[in-house]
Image (cartoon, rainbow, N blue to C red; front, side, top):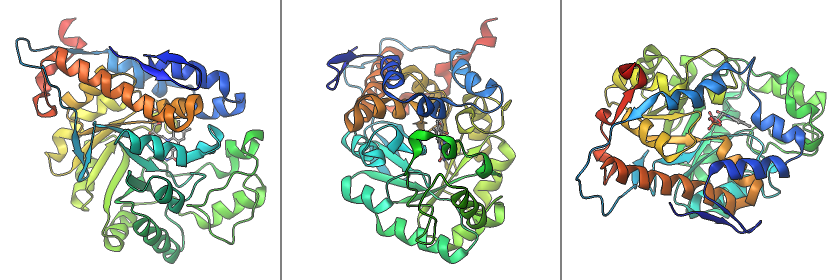
Length: 369
Ligand code: FNR
């Protein structure tokens, strides 16, 4: 396997684990803890990674894999790989250039980037820094629909082609925001969530009160219907784990579903997202695109997810590790690592293009026990 050369430290990184170790070394401890944080006692965060180990690959042989093509079409955009960046908050805590660096790394790898409403760089900054990058926006609905419409218009003007709505967070923990206690978060901005009337210091109790007063929570299916009527952009619901909810999502006219448990940061004790994926793929019957995130750490994880029916996988923490380790270049390197590992895994499994990846390529370990 070819390795990715990390310029900043002159280290040759051929494993994601190396980015993780360097990120841990470079980040202040409060930021490392914030990025690593699981909910409750951390069952689901561990299960996300463990579950991938329980699927076995059954390769096909004697096929011509002299050329392997990992290109994918996701939400109508052509990407070099079916691996893209999940929305995560506060990239300026990992690198001074924040989400601008992430967007640059994603664009140079020809992947896609979901910008979080809890980002520290504005949608307009992202458009200016990486004008050709594929970008989607994770929207937080406001109590005032006019404010939400304003955010939608900004997203559209800034070239975001899809709106992601995270549906597994019915209650924001504003009163216990970890950022408000983080020394490293001093002076952080949330320019895609707040308006000019927000108090300046994002760590103050006034700011917490502002969020509580302005952000719509909980959101319901009626809000998804409202969103469908108020934007022509594509819509993805992120955080669905049940087949029944997936069918409802198809009914209300969304374009995609991301099977996710928020990287184990919301309700603890839910299944690993890779385990929830097959039922949801079956339930939607190809009517919308289905993605998955949570615990994806290697090219073989990506291959397994694709075989189980995902059109694209999303990575959260691995991107933060790349960003902390080596800025935009680190994000690019992490994505390249996934692409190279997927390329090799596909060749070894007898697949020269994504359409060769069939459900019969994976078998759950219980079959062998
Ligand atoms: C997240 N995630 C997240 N999700 C979301 O919809 N909106 C957000 O603002 C955030 N913020 C966020 C911050 C941090 C620090 C992490 C680690 C995660 C969840 C994220 O989109 C994704 O679902 C998981 O990170 C995927 O799991 P892995 O790849 O981190 O294991």
